[in-house]
Amino acid sequence: MTTVRPTLAAVQQQVAAAVARAGRTGDSVTLIAASKTIPAEVIEEAVAAGQTVFGENRVQEAMAKWPALLDRHRQIRLHLIGPLQTNKARDAVRFFDTIHSVDRVALAAALAKESQKQGRRPECFIQVNIGAEPQKAGASIAEVDSLIAACRSEYELDVAGLTCIPPSGEPPERHFTMLAEIAARNGLKCLSMGMSQDFPAAIECGATHVRVGTAIFGKRAA
Ligand SMILES: *Cc1c(COP(=O)(O)O)cnc(C)c1O
Image (tube, rainbow, N blue to C red):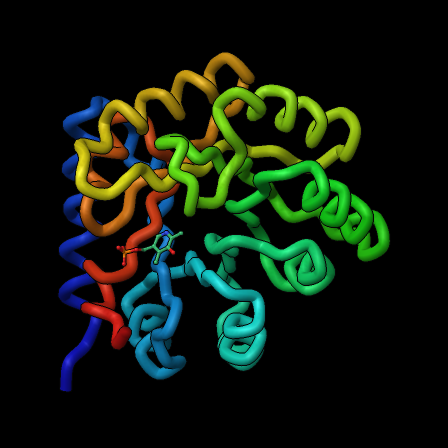
């Protein structure tokens, strides 16, 4: 039987090594296990191996898969890392501890309305389209400062930091560094950046949250 225990341990070690190289403290990076398409029994193995923070891409998939797991494991924190439609804001606020994909005013408004209704205020990250790619979600670099300001003052969201997915096929460091600069000038502490391919580099550029799927769970079926 295969198990995620060794791959998870290897990723944890690579995280620790990158943290040490960057001269940062041991607890400064949160490893989010990106579990989209991964079945509950495999997630159970990761939980048994000590993983407590998981990321899902789709609200609907998460709501089908996670209630039973969360019942059994109260320590788990669930992050939404995929794009969020405004009409799913209610479920997202109800279900997730952290939302990494706030990228427009209409979504911020919907999340604010639901937060107020539900008395629940998930931590939010503003997603930036750091490589200005037409097919990718995220606020443009030009508009991100005003979106951050609106999320804070107008919508009173709990804005923790910024998220990005750099363009594939080019060195990511320049994009990671740019995201860190945008966060710094806005007084934001958290940076959600780095996936299986590039999480050590992201940590060296200041990532506080890395989202790692394939390196833990193996290649996803399609
Ligand atoms: C799937 C996904 C990840 C993890 O990607 P891997 O390359 O499998 O590590 C991270 N972030 C987001 C937004 C994703 O959709």
